[in-house]
Amino acid sequence: MTTFQSKNDKCILLLFLFLALCNASLSATPESSVTLNNNNNENDNNNDNNEPKKLDNFPECTKWAAEGDCRTDPVFMNEECALSCDLQPDYTKIDVVHVKDDDESFFGLKEKNYDGRIFDLDQLEGYITLVVYLPKLCGHAKEFYSVIEHLRSVWPWTLELLIFPYHIMSSSLKSSESNNQEDCTSEYNQVAQTMNKKIHIMQDVILPSSNDQSSQKQQHYIYDYMANLFPKLKEDMTKMMTNKYSFAFLIAPDGDIIEYHHRVYLPGLKEYIVGHLQADL
Image 1 (cartoon, one colour):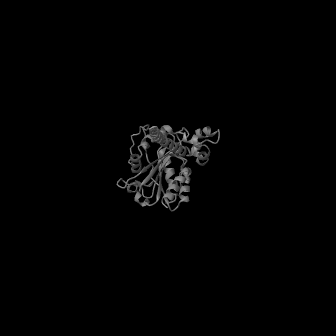
Image 2: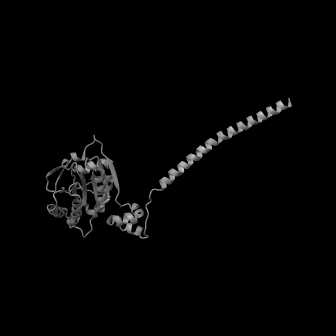
Image 3: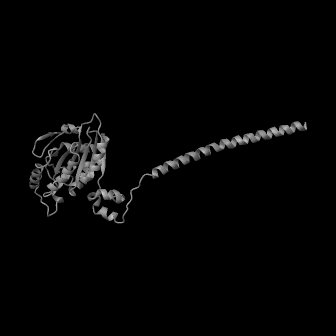
């Protein structure tokens, strides 16, 4: 009897040990799982942190950015003072819209050339199209248009340009700047006659502004089309006109992608044109 009890005791003891081990194993499994998940989350966070941060490499970056160097020297400033440029309210910003197949196409619009002739935009379909609005400042037509001609010379077979000189609000002009818009129009039209035919100089436009009390109204189809795609455009107009900024729209060959470049520095558009060229290869 004693032997039997001792065997039972051993069996019971072994059973308890087995159950204890099972419970320990089961309770450990969730902890292991949680630890693994936490490690995965830490790896994900580390991957996010691996993205390059915008930094300033010179102590003068803040000063240079405030003086407008992000617009006048974008290559250097983007590389060496990226953080300060990104914080500048007047730095070029970009909005992008994807146009659906059943939406109105940019290439279905019409506008007037500087000499009053109707220009059908369907002629531009299949090309990268750059629409630029230039502040119409007397004495600066050649300067502005020379930059445009340079862009055209880089991509003579793939890039089409539409240029709209726009009226400047009288209140934003300095005392030394001419306020005679008719004189400016004559100057810009004379320069337009010497331009490459692939650069389409359009009729100068009066754009709406909340600060402009003028009763003059003008139908401008491209502006209306873009304002419908980019509601922010109307909000930006007063500031752009007051500060005499250029702004631009870059349209993909199929018209399905349109970029709105706020307060643009024209030579800085090259990298975006290259991006569209690479996307179409």
